[in-house]
Length: 539
Figure 1 (cartoon, rainbow, N blue to C red):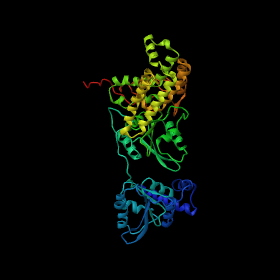
Figure 2 (cartoon, rainbow, N blue to C red):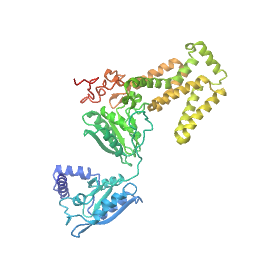
Figure 3 (cartoon, rainbow, N blue to C red):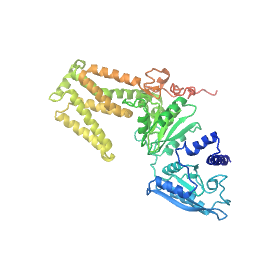
Figure 4 (cartoon, rainbow, N blue to C red):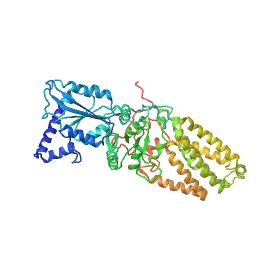
């Protein structure tokens, strides 16, 4: 009933607008819902005009399909109509059985088409048996409907059209996560389909306050992008800022969420990312419950999470699915592994070149014997070995899986042993580089940053020794402390120091201790847990 009233209002405003008798408020309303401030073209009542407009917009593309037919009524009156869709994006079964078949058979109880009541009310209310039907008034909306995989129905004499849900394109099934692998926890991961991804989050967060707002980005691709947040938990200022940055994007195409991450980044010239990403719906759900915002891009299996803090690179979902005794220490080990992987080659070069007095005599003699006959300096030797390791790692990633791991392992073993045997590299350096490489895999989220920082500290160590390493660490700290992610300091909760958030920082406290959400993320609803431990007895 409400829909019919709305349709009548729209129809009357349209008639008043066309006759020039509309009020200012009616004129503004009409432009917003129909003309989009004059930028869109209205659907014509002449079906042939609409046919030619759609055909011209797609430049005669072969995958654009038209199906013309007559809509019948019980009195025998017929009306010309056609549907348009893109082959490969729609379900043929839905079109044949739920759209074309019923319309050709006739509209039950309909003696004539009453335009004054509603444009397409007899059709969408009585005949089409699909879950999603939407009335549109512009050619541009019809084009977007086709591109989304829906079917658009035009009828002669109607100044509107219907977008009918008929998506049926092939898509990848839900599989186990490949990058964020965990021993314990859910095993599903995001896919390239937007609605599948939003559904996976909705299944976990069964809350009517969970909001998905979809906008389109990309002048050419018109990519649907969903902004997800929980109303009442996420800060209003954060929501407005995210929408403002997204609406400010002006680019030809968005092919992956990585495009958006670079275009809304707070620090585009820093090596550190201030926009997080995840392929796991349980991680995205946990971020939403903390008051963060998740951005899901159609065609990308990685969702963006923001704000993003540096400490999140050392957090994994399994930390929260197990008891805290092990998670307490393993997170600290991840931070230690990050320091080792970026510092180990630089420390080796600094000590062997400038600060031999730090080594015990026996160890110094052992290293000296191993380096005897090496034609390169420790710095050049370490730099070459790091570059060779990166080449092997990249080759292992790009090659087919069946031989990629074999090439990486065999290549590293053979080349390392051959380099030592030929006197090109020393055994202590090969051990150092190998240890640094293994430690780097512990913090997979920082792989890009690890490579750059290794080279950065290695160069400083080769030029200035230990003083260069200290100077580089100071520069790195200044840079990281100055970064922000959507108004939040990147190094929170360590710098600035927030005692309340340290319970989920470098170490992981028990869940019953983490009573509040991260400070500054959900000021209106900060409490997330309030259970006594141990549970109180009923006696």
